[in-house]
Structure formats: structure tokens, C-alpha cells
Length: 503
Image 1 (cartoon, rainbow, N blue to C red):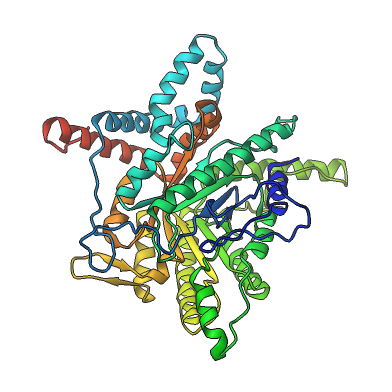
Image 2: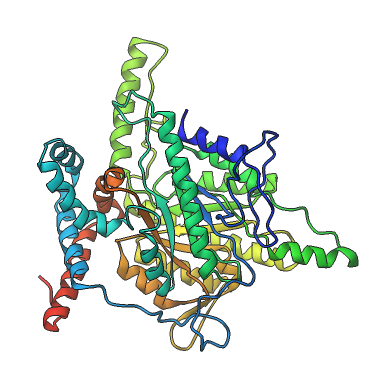
């Protein structure tokens, strides 16, 4: 039983008790359930992205607003409270990114780790080194509770978080012939529900009444595009347009006040050649089906892998065609002679940025329709990017579409309508300079910028750490790891000697 099926089973058989202030996931299943999947104290929105199920906590209308007390309009200051990281954290960052700057070490890191962890005595030393370097750099803690101080620290800087129990599940891994036992699936589902509870309690403490989403939850699942679409059709379903009558107007307004959509998001990767067409088809399907479309737009971090897999699949297909008409199983997502990804990075950048512009234009149109009484929001976008040009483009497009307003000091006020529909994210432990820049540039009542924050025991997240080292090469781009190392070195020199020079 795959994790996707297990999660689907839990979702479909879960009952819930409606809360006066929070929308929970409804169920059409006739089967009774002993325990609600999403109760009023759990995260009420679930965002499903290709490989991750992400949810935003619904907000109580009378919950505490996170903002500086002396702001008359209830908005946070541009420069949120930010404390300098301790010297030990700067040294750790320097060491981690120095290692990530060595291509051969990064490429062979999974093999190196598996070898060292198999040697008694060396295993314990290796785990200690990994914990005090890569683990502390990229992971929030061993448990959801241990990640709470990181959540508090991020929120104090007006940054949100996407909390994720980061256990790696991939039953299609080459050489993996043993299916994951059902008990392991149950453990993942149980921990995910606990993660949702922890995140919901945290968000209830800090939430904003403007409908924005400051704390999200991600559930790692493999290859679930079709499952995601099914979830959107069921849980992102939009209400029927309100009837225009004196008797129904007040009820419609009250219903709209607690309606937060979309709840489910799907991932679209800018480095895939199919993305423009797939995104257009998804938009059309959502409109025809009457549900809100949630889009998580990322560039993608597996370009070399996709190229190699496609080459191997093409060779296998040619060999199978010659030997047997039945063919063979392929891992590549593209049966074409061309690989599924763009061959040039410029094409990936162009695809990503044009998608940003289109989505924000559609969000502008959605805001206008909702202002006239149409149900919504009907579209939302979570932009995951470590690219400075793309991150600035997002804010510029919000301004261009009238969803954000520049102020004389150089900052940009993000409207409540945009906050309900748009967010930007980067990975925890990476691109902190970009994250700080986005927080400093934008003004908003609740976090507009999120950090993807994994947690789990060292043994559970070890595969994630190996993959993160490899992804650094793609996510940060050419010389990105070296740039992170230099920034850490500059901060260390400034802290010790009052100089910003770096080696």
C-alpha cells in the first residue's frame, strides 16, 4: 500500500466536527471514522504539491495579530526584529557551504555517507559531524516540538514556515524491490497529523485575521500529480455564486469571511518543457470544474538527473523495440526523443518568469471578480525561488497589477487580497540573504516570505541531507554555494575584526 493511497484512505474516511471559525476538510465517505483527520485545531487547508502535501492554517477572526504595537493600521514594520546569528552558526554555514563547493564531494556524498555509516565506531563519529553541520544547517529539529523555537525565531522576523516531517519515501528507487511495510506508512501518517496539530496551535497563537497563511505543513509523497488534482477537485470546490437578494446578502458575506481558498496546491516545475501547456490546461480544468487552483511554482532541482534518465530510457526503448514489441518500463517522464527538461538554463528562467507574470495577472483578475461578488479566491500561487531576479519580479508584478503599493521609503505594501493568494518561499538554511531582502522590501501584516523547514530524527532525514547537498548545485546555480560561503566568511570577519573582507 503506497503512502499516497494510505493518505487518501485517511482523508476519505475522516469525519469532522464543524468549527464556528475554521473550515475543515469535508468528507463524502459513508464509512465512519473514530478520529477526525482535520479538526478545528488542526490545519484546515491542505496544499498538495508534486511530492509534498502542504497546508495553511485557517485563522480565527479574533486571534492575535502579529504586528508591532505602534503601527496604526495593524501592519508590521518593514524592518522586522532581526537578531544576528551566533558566531557558531556562521562558522557552521561556512563549513557546510565550503563542502558544498566541492563538486566531487557533493556528487559522491550519498555513497560516502552510506559507507561510513556502515562501519561500527565510525558511524557514531559520522553522525555527530553530520548533526553539527548539515543537520543543524538545514533541519529544524528532531521533532515538531523541537522545531518550535525555529518557528518562533522566523515569525519574530516576519517570516513564515512550511513545516515538513522530512522522511524520504520513494518506492521507485532503482534497486528497491521491497515495498515499505504498512506500519511505516502508518507511522508517517500519524506523525504528519501530529505535525499538523503542532503547526495549527502555533498559527492560532500568531495568526492574522486578513486570511493570509503564515504556517504551512508539507507531507512528502512520491509521484502524485493525479492524486493532487483529485484532492483539488474535492477540497478546493468553490461555493455556488451567491443569490442576489436582500435576504441572502448577509449570509453570503458571512460565508465569504471564513472561506480560505485554495487549500490544495500542485507543483509546476519551470525546467520542464511541458509546464506552459500543463499550467494552461490546469487553469482551464479548474475553471470548468468549479474549484480553486493552487500553484506551487519552482524551477526544479534535478536537471542533470532528468537528462541522464532520459538518455538511459531512450537507449532502453531502442533496445527493447529491437528485441521485443512489448517494450520495457521507463523512469523518464518524457517518451519523446527530446528530454523532458529545457536544455538551456535561460529557457528555464524564461519559463519560470513568464509563468510568474501570467499567474499574477490571473490573480489580479480573480481579485476583481471577487470584489464584484463572485466566489473565491479561485487561484493562489506559492513561488519557490532562490533566484534574485525572479524574487524581485514577483514583487514588481504585484505592483504592476495594482496588488501592491510602493511607499516613499522604498518598501512595497502587499495588499490583503494579494496576501490571501500569494507567498514566496526559500529552503531553510539557504539563501538567507535573499529571504532577508524580500522581508525588508515588503510590508505586510503577516509573513509573505516562508522558509521550507524540515524536521525528523537524524537517521530519518539523512537521505534528505544527502539530496540537499546535491540539489545545492542546481538550486543555487553556478557558484551559488561559493557565494553563500563568502557571505558567511564576511560575517565572521566582521564579527571578529570589524572587517567585511572575506577570503
